[in-house]
Image 1 (cartoon, one colour):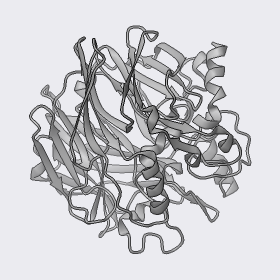
Image 2 (cartoon, helix red, strand yellow):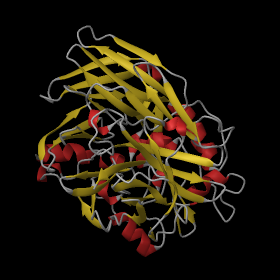
Image 3 (cartoon, rainbow, N blue to C red):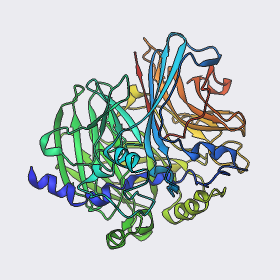
Image 4 (cartoon, rainbow, N blue to C red):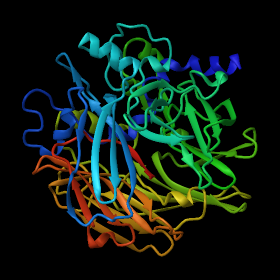
Length: 500
């Protein structure tokens, strides 16, 4: 047990800085000062909030909200971008802001609360940043004793075993009160797992079984199997048999856990010398990307396959029948392009770059042959019906860039039938930035995709945020309803809906 903890904590200084946020870094740049977002109105939410919480009841509803849509949509993302005149250089450095959109029989309320992590409390009291971040080099003024010293809890959410968590893959899951959103502290799943990173992309199967991982800069991977009641059933830590710095997401099939290990190297000497993590990364395409297959039945049974270098951050889903394995993901521009885009966008400059596009992978489990298919739509943040996780599936939904005309962000939604190749699209227009949307199954339904597509948007003309609700099988007809906030909120990363 001690060896396991030491292996993970050996890479704590790197893991703590959120290595796996690179995809989120593609998105936005920050200007600064009183003129923030002048001339680029879609960037206004990246001004950030001042650390105070938000709340609004009986929200304005445009259209007809489905009466059967009952439950809470939790959304997480960076909310605080500056302190004491100092501003983060990267969007994903911001302290976590968890939102709760509560739907109750046609009425909706909104609550947003900053996650009171150890870091957030210390810096709030000091009135300035005290600790380094993944994309911003800050000289530490407090001791870093492990990943949770710099945990910003800003990437996703999870409800498991009756508990709610804010997730950030550099460190522990941070437990919150599901009603008040008050922080309770880091979750230790078991004594021997204290200090292990816990990814922001856990996979929950239809029976409630949760699978997750955590990665460290030292090339080690932790695996978790957790029961629907929140108990650790199995865990392990092992050295990844490939040269990679970061793992952001993964896929679960009936028999396997699947990872795509991108050829990203990290210069730890540069990090220890004070460099930001992002600046210390390099892309080595000659190494290719490695597909790591881990048996769910026995974590010690692992296979490695080679494929061309690919920058992969988010998966939709995967399945296998014992003979072949299929999955989908979104391929992003390679690391050099990401870095160039980051520098320009973080200066508040719009910059056209190569889009992220859908990919479909098939692996013959006997021969090891990998076949890839691609599409050209500009998309990200794929989601599937939560009832088909790890099972054969047919439908994927994405935010999409349809008619942005040079403006930043996604302006629409795409529904793709991966068996027929048919697609549906809806475009909100140039004034709206579209975030991740999730599939909410209709109560009593069993058919894949029979539900609502729910997510957040920002109207740059009105300078207000809203939630949109679509019939997931007819998104081209437009939203059934928009639920308007009386204010705007910062852009988030990932969310989950939990039915009442």
